[in-house]
Length: 151
Image (cartoon, rainbow, N blue to C red; front, side, top):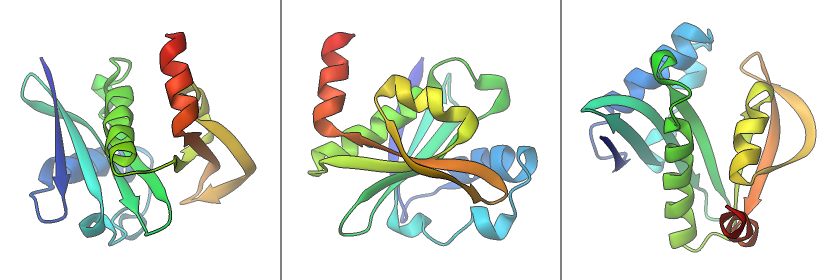
């Protein structure tokens, strides 16, 4: 059974931080000071649990102007089970319920297809973030609704 939980900066983020540490710091070799960027207390976090085990996480931050998803991570042994999709959709639901018209993110280049399946579109040029090639992506609420009607 899969369960999704929303958390904020006042909650215990141990499970979210564990997953991010395993994926970004240990696996992808992102520097800890980059990964732990001080923005977690401002974010809404989502954690997916499969059979009671934390398997995926992500966060969304609203800066007063834009909603941005970041830190989407799934434990290596739990990938290809739709947990990442589950987390992104939880965060999109939260943003759109709060009035977002669009949601932004920066995707690692290898993950573009993952986000495109949800409805995100790339824009701009590729850039380096923490030593990893990324590109900006966005999803308009109206576009997501069209994608849902197609599926």
